[in-house]
Length: 137
Image (cartoon, rainbow, N blue to C red; front, top):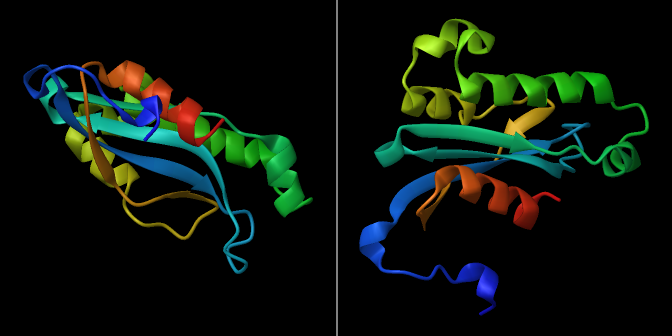
């Protein structure tokens, strides 16, 4: 097992979190996808966050006619919804857990959530960035 899978420290100083990858599926009928972001929810910290990174070269390799601007807009909307505030629109009034559950609900659009997984962390925001580096970039 490599160091990237080992979380040091006692279990009492870490919080449970849930996360899902955001996938871009440019041609749903083919089922091919690339990872383009991470959604993370930590109930104990009332945290919901998203970080995205779109590799345009990989996307266009799957579909040369992919709507890159549209995909970027959809990924940006997810980040804004997680951040809350006026940029989140009507969803800003929802608690973080409700926003996370809405975002991970199955969809048949170009940007889709993957299955939900769990982990332990001391810092949900740093964990979101770590997962982005590990699973997306």
